[in-house]
Amino acid sequence: MRFDLAAVAAAAGAPAHGAASLTGVAVDSRRAKPGDLFVAIRGARVDGHDFARDAASRGAAALLGERHPVDLPPEFPAVLVDQPLAALLRLAAATKRSSDFRLAAITGSAGKTTTKDFAAAVLARRFAVEKTPGSQNSQIGFPMSVMNLPRAPEWMVGEMGMSEPGELARLSRAFEPDVAAILLVAAAHLQYFASVDAIADGKAEILEGLKPGGTFVANADDPRVAAIAARHRGRLRVVRFGRGPGAEVTARGVAAEPDGSRFVLATPQGEAPVRLPLPGAHQVSNFLAAAAIGHAVGVPPAECAAAAETLTPAAHRGEIRRHASGAILYDDAYNANPASMRAALETLAALPARRRIAVLGDMLELGPDEDRWHREAGAAAFGRADLLVCVGARARLYGEGAVGAGLPESAVRRVASAEEAADLLAGVLAAGDAALFKASRGVGLERAVALLAPER
Image 1 (cartoon, rainbow, N blue to C red):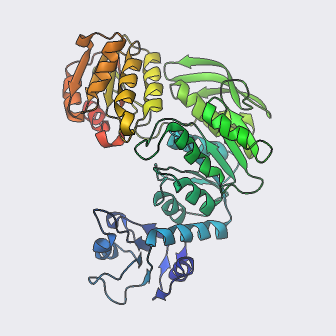
Image 2 (cartoon, one colour):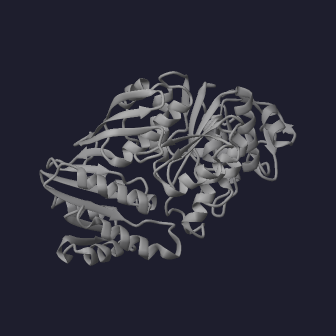
């Protein structure tokens, strides 16, 4: 997106010192590109102002910050405000309004990035579409995604995340989605929320900025999401997706296959056969959410089905790799919470294999009940995994839960790191095995996959 320093000043409500033509935004100096606005954010451990000179050396053309760093030339173009992050949010919101593209915003305790990618593929069958890259869904990442769009599309598909109450409300009110989807509500970020019901209230904030006449896409299979939809009955247009009764967008005759599934997509617009090339019942649900977004904006079921054939998993979110032995490596290591952990274990159980191995690392930010959540996830591994590898300090609780549920102690291994897990598995994996890798982001379990199946 092209803008200038005057637009930054107008959004920030502060004077522009100098002038600059700009093409993007960066908050990490190492990723600054020529023409970027460098936004200096002062955090608890790092002050972005200390890296403004580095950003300028990489081509950043202007600064949005609290002060003008002494190591920047005094004539370097800048807008100075008390709260640069709030100014970035206002700038991105103003840019979205002036560009006049429509927005489909997606939230949920799991599946946001995958569903975003699915929905972008569905909408691209009829519209010019852009999407938030990776998992840039935060108060910083989402505004950056808007400012770094390569063009003004007809539709943008973006995920919106939260780590504390009020965050989704700020994003939704700023960017006014035309479609807002809630995928599911589960235990996640309980370090910052009092209960799962409080998480549901936080997810419902995505509706606060929904445009008049907009559509709420709701998971009919999730009781908390269904309750949010019921509260808005008659006030909002609601499209429900799911496998159970009450869903307008659903899947009939789901047949699991080694590398995906087949089913009939049924919507109020008609039906179409779908071949989804990603394994797991949760991926069917993610696709139904994307198809419901498509249905909400007029994409017919046949076009949704055609989009399904092109889908691939995002990095470390359900990727299938192969070990030299021929063993299947199911890389779902990007992040984890109790709901996504169970979904991954169910996918492992459905993979074609003689022996199934669950490599599970710590789940983070689960608050005071984290021990219980880990033991319950371990219990869920019983009957779905023949061998359990626990990675990290909290992960020992997986073993306790699994053994308590009936898994023999001899089938549990405990290691401290992703590298130790890779060393262990290197001498264990054989043809006919399938191994799941799942943990919170901080564990870095994708490193184990990279060591076991290095890319050529």
